[in-house]
Image (cartoon, rainbow, N blue to C red; front, side, top):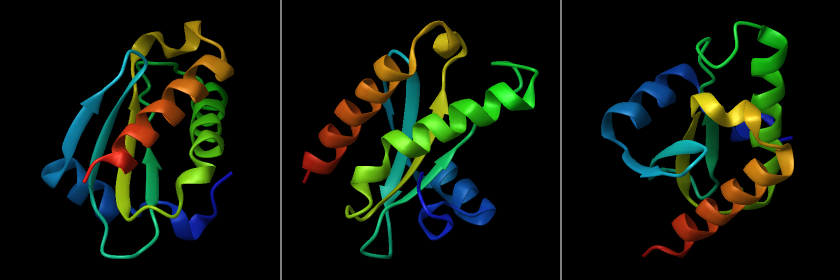
Length: 109
């Protein structure tokens, strides 16, 4: 799980949503911008359309924060927005996809 200091605040989430670039995957969309800090900041938005239960939405949020744990050294602000069919896939599949996409992002100049 990522520490609270490495998470995006509400104002940072709106800034990333408006000024960020997008990278779409089969399971989620990443919206990212350069961070002012040397450390990465992550945010996850899980809509009620994915699941009306808060327990399920929080489980997805925790899965994404855990998978992104190794990428806190990059200087990006990253917002993760899961797609509606994400619950059909296991945590290993979505975590591997997130790691693959984050490695792709971190390797960009």
